[in-house]
Length: 447
Image 1 (cartoon, rainbow, N blue to C red):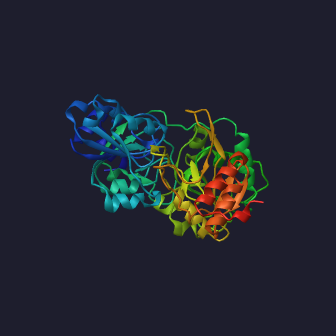
Image 2: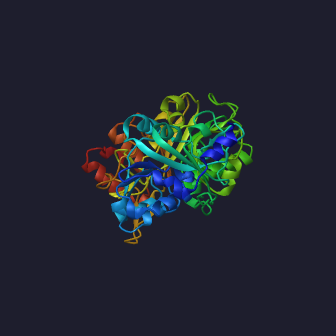
Image 3: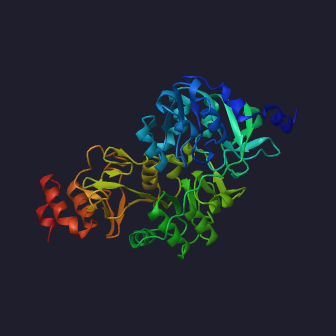
């Protein structure tokens, strides 16, 4: 039987495929852009006969149909590896929960730690002539998911780009239990408006630190995007990419001729990433592009791999941080925002790289929408319940619109002094008073 015959023998409807799901099952929806659509709707239609079905996924673009059924908590539970804005809203329904992780460990979680998966269902790109589907822009941990799943159902969608890779970015028709065909729009992250003056100021300070031939990792958000735009307009050359998330900023840099990968120590000439999300421009660029390499996250985010890439530059956001150098990138107090993701992976890996630097960037202040008051993102201590994403021992460079400071090798009073030096001027005196009360301030520091 050839590949096409095998394909046709496994082809079925979404309604028929989801009949294998039973009450009490753990099932998996994949991740981000490859979250199923037709299979999700068909499973939701069975809500009255199913109870306590537990689903893993993450980075949703819209609310899954299964999470919109009546009395959802009795029937389905959503367990997210990394929360989008949609998932934050879903928490209020009482059936959505976060799964703390260091992203690099996720494939091993599946192989060794989590409850067995009865059914995995996710979107894939159309099968090639060799019988392979790609996981599209979400290689991430999908091979590990498939290894642990008793039943694998793929939803073939022509809108999912064929993303080339080096390893664990495909599944063969022989490994698939059932096939469903359904086209639906791929989820997109808006490019956002123009960078603010603060974004531009922070980006300029970071770009000054990037040498020719550097290897880049960008997080998501306005500031990393501003860095990408500034690099695209700069004189930098021969840059490489080794990142967890591939974003639109990389496409802009590639279009400007900045990304050759010629000086990369690993995967030379290729832009390596675990998953991607952005505008259609990004998906069109990734489709069948040999310059880009989809790879599992235990490769992209492994600190031992990152450390082998000289002049590695990691650029990520923070919600807030304190005078001890503890960085929170996950919550506002106990209010959940996103997740740990791979930030700590890259903070540690970049510092281990020869010539490498990790940058945590944020605006010095934010407007509290409830009170209408301007508040400092730099606090004496993190708010009660805030999550420490990066410990005080891990923080390397901190950048705000008021400057950049290298915090490695500093004592508590030096660290506090440097952090306060890039705080908004209106808050510096009260931060000094707090530092003094916490015994991490030398009175002679203030001149």
